[in-house]
Length: 415
Image (cartoon, rainbow, N blue to C red):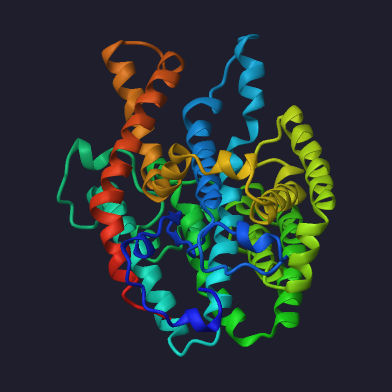
């Protein structure tokens, strides 16, 4: 929200009200910071950095590519290296977590002293998250409600292993951990939304009640504790490998790294260090990227040690340094590449696209398998492309006619 003089400023312009999200996360407004770099001043973080929209676009693109292309199994010597190169595209969710922590943490830090701190935060969250979430969830869970409106073959198809009440309360990730799987696969992506919403129930109170030093200590403790908890679950929980992926405490390192980055860039000393010692940041990125390449070469997936122990933390730290590199770099090739309109536009559509892409990709594959009478393997790629196209069309309509108007309503509530 920016400095105190801007924290309580009413949102009046259309541009200010139209705030895209990361899986439902309203982002703070940013402007180009070029004029401020020459003085090494801490930026006004309530203004817009378009490149962050591009990072959000990359995150959703990774997720879409994972489920439409790179998740395919093959024995082809031609396709195998290509699919291996995209092995870690599932980690687009981890990039979402880091971005969410950074943007939400920044909003809370800038509005920390507002008398409407909690009220405005949760009202805006409600406008952004719940209408689309409950619409999509209702469409897929309607026939599973305990009223038996659709009896017969349709009602018996794809039984609901996770109670509908869990989806209503956004606690489905805990049920998934208990089952050791996602349950109804059309609703599988909602696990990460549940993680973020549970995080939002706690982080506003932490930010509000702790000073900067205490907040940093808590965040660092959570970042260290998360991989240790994942290691513990591997050996002492029936579905420890899967639980490490979907439980909120186990994914707190990525979210807390994002919040920690938001805290650090608001420190004049650390901000000055970032923009005058960029070689250190680039060196850290190279080291972490080497590890990411090694993980890809080893074909580590999200449910196997060592990825789901310390590997998640490595990825989260890599994405955090990527984010810091973007926000601390003067306008240039990197910022221009991330600020291209298609990538920024994709970032705006991320929330709806994330919620709907799995069932639409599944439907696309069924259509190809039925019409062309081909195997599941043969329908994987064309069905996935059809599903992505459908997802983007629906997400575009949703953003224009449903999500954006609701965001405007939410932003009538100011800090």
